[in-house]
Amino acid sequence: MEKKRARHQNPKPFIAEDIDCVASAKKRSKAAKHHQKQETMISSGMSSKILKEALIQQKEIQEEAEQANPANNAFVVAEEDAARHQQEEEDDDFDDFSGFSETQTQFGDEEIDEDEEKLLEAFLSKEAGPQRTLADLIIEKIKQENANISSDTQPMPKLDPSIIDLYKGLGEFLSRYTVGKMPKAFKHIPSMQLWEDVLYLTKPESWSPNAMYQATRIFASNLGAKKAELFYRLVLLPRIRDDVKQNKRLHFALYQALKKSLYKPAAFNKGILFPLCKSGTCNLREAVIVGSIIQKVSIPMLHSSAALLKLAEMEYCGTTSYFIKLLLEKKYALPYRVLDAVVAHFMRFLDETRIMPVIWHQSLLAFVQRYKNELTKEDKQNLRTLVGKQKHKLVTPEIIRELDSSRNRGEKEDPMSMTSPISVINKVIEEDRFDIPQVPMEED
Image (tube, rainbow, N blue to C red):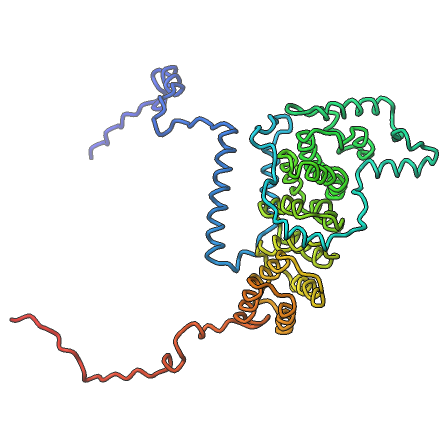
């Protein structure tokens, strides 16, 4: 028997001849291929522009979908509006303010119908007092603390003398402010405990329009809703009304400040809209200017419903109908409580002997057009009685037509009413199985 041949084995099979060569080969970096090259990062400015364009496109798509399905128009989420405002505020830089162009110096050149304005004046309050300002509030508080204060000199709050001198000088700067950075001392006012007293030292009534715009941006961003409401009611609103009264129009910077104030809708309603209507002296020009802000800016549904409920229950001022009409035309799905309050608001004028202005009839028409299917049968009958006494030759027939072509609250739309009659749909189709048409065949 033959012996097996011995197998030749390498004693060190895994040891390379040149270890240094292998290590250097591993360390040697290969040139990256084209598809493996890392892309350069885009700048923050470019990324913000891309996000803005994406939001605009998303909003356009949403509007198209809402137009296709009007039932979803009312379900506007307040968080989307808050996120939009937050994005706008992040993009804002208080120090990067270059003023407004000379072509945008005034707002409110719209022609006002004199006849309509005279009709509205009949509903204005004749006993309304002057507009309260921040100075009135602070002086009243100082006089309560010290009854010996003379009315001839400007009373000063109990603050450190250095702070008083600082903010007095700041007030002189704000009266001449046009463009550029706002002082850091002014930016610290919202975080102070006695911010009203400090703000009073700067004399807000003498600020320039651009300074008022910058101040509104800062206070709307850094103050809570209650404090912002106080700033709107005592500082911003009196300034806007004085400017409209003096110039018959509103400075563009003040108009932008009014637009920025809607960043906090609750504060805007309680600090601008409600005091303006409660004053009883809001004229048509002021209503058109403030209403244009409400018309342009998106307001969350809950805030719009609360504003509409409050306006409906408020003592009537002629221009109140204008604000009611604007809120109704936003087409939100209002709660039944709000709808009932609006119906009660209009029914208050059943026995009114004065001639109602056209805007009152237009607001009633807007209400019936938007919410005719959400009204009860009793409400519709009451509204028919109302328009029988308060008539307008052009608007009243439209109101009656809308009421007649609507269903009552709780009733569902009959899907069969838009199709062919039931007798035609349920007709039995008879078919003769022997009546078969001839089919042409190919010749063999």
